Length: 400
Image 1 (spheres, rainbow, N blue to C red):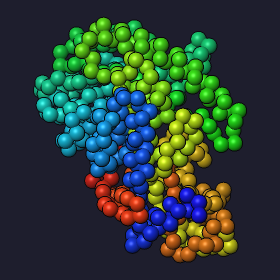
Image 2 (spheres, rainbow, N blue to C red; image 1 turned 45 degrees about the vertical axis):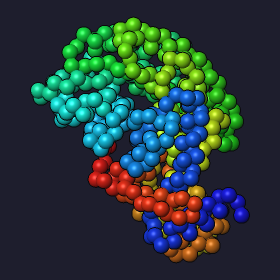
Image 3 (cartoon, helix red, strand yellow; image 1 turned 120 degrees about the vertical axis):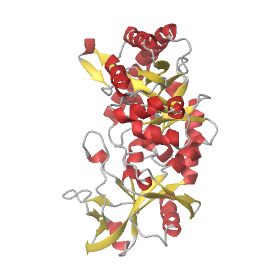
Image 4 (tube, rainbow, N blue to C red; image 1 turned 90 degrees about the horizontal axis):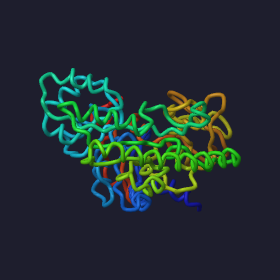
């Protein structure tokens, strides 16, 4: 029996009394992945990206482990909810236009002490001030540095379009604007190199493209390390009490941790290890989050139909954004139908061994987005479900 077949038998035994569709997190794999992130972070704390987890119980579990400190959130409403729930170090990774949220932040001492907001434009400071509604709490601010690799005088760009702040001088100029403004305190810098951390460099069956990605990433790491170091020095000249410099992601943990300027690493997808994180030379994680769909039809030889399944991931549309039929091994989508809204046909010889009611296990392309489809996660230890915990959705929250 292969390791994957053994996992399938274990998952089926553990959930035999549970009807699919359902979502499961294998805690043995989750904890092993957490240990690997800490090892690669080389002594620097790992800040957990909540968008890649979206479950309070699992955020609490990982933050109780040595080597993890703080949350990187994705909306202001989520940040405030986490602060009210007892999380005391929440970095909002994206600028917000949530006026009601800013009014709450500026009037709540506990929230203001726990939450740091992201800024890359003076206009965002203006929006926050206009939204205060009399709240006088000091708002903690983090500045974001653009990490994209730009070549040929900027005519070629590799990396996400995030912050407009690219140079150390631009970052320092905004730092001075924050320092001059009452009601704000600059506490951090963030620089997320998604073109390194979130792009696999070992694509199956594509050796030439994989080598090109590795070359690009090596150049990008060198360029960014120099520019990020200079930016941190420029900002520290304005704000010497800067508390943190955040960088990295699951795919770049060890490289980012090696930079002296960086004080903490961000990571989240490396806990669940969705399918998009299979293609890296720098690490190998264990799939920890899966979902099961029930077989509801057997249309013919070599075909079964499961209920649901159309759970594409965000990003540029493509086959790599679809969930992966994972267990039993050897199933594939019908190219004429793909993953369907209410039913999904699956092709392959393993279909002939599946009965009505059997489970087919899938891996989502991305991490936390799976939790937008399920109210609860069943937590597996060994071959036993030991707990069932709500996702954000299960607690009544869909923040985006």
